[in-house]
Image 1 (cartoon, rainbow, N blue to C red):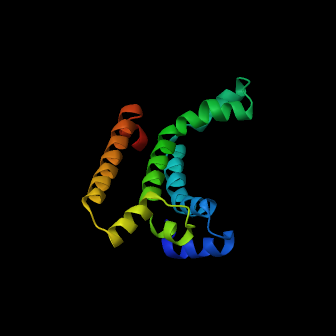
Image 2: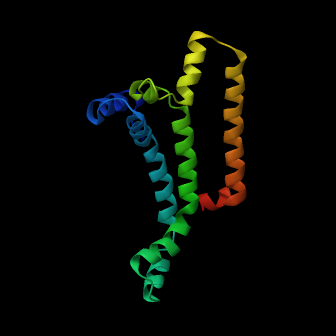
Image 3: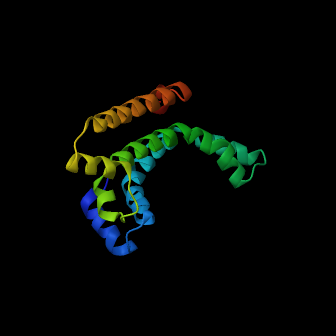
Length: 152
């Protein structure tokens, strides 16, 4: 479950402090982190725990076995989580509206402002580019990792 946008933004605004790029980052982190954790844990639960134990038996230290054995097993989940987090953060205008300062302008805020004050066809072009970028990322992840590897 992901936390709702408006209460999360209000809570972050009250606890983190004045609006800045850092507060926008924390807000997007709170909304996107559940996606990364969920997909990474899904892959981690299907990985073989004996591989890390075998690496430790063969003389690898804890950090080396983590980086050389466990992290490569989790890469498909991390990539999928990063993809979800990017899309969620890229589309999230509510948190950005609540937490931004006047000098911090994110793309969803700019699109929202353009639609509100001066609707023009360039917004449709930006939306088309966003959709094309999402499709391109899906194709690149499929080519690099293979989506069937994520579900196995």
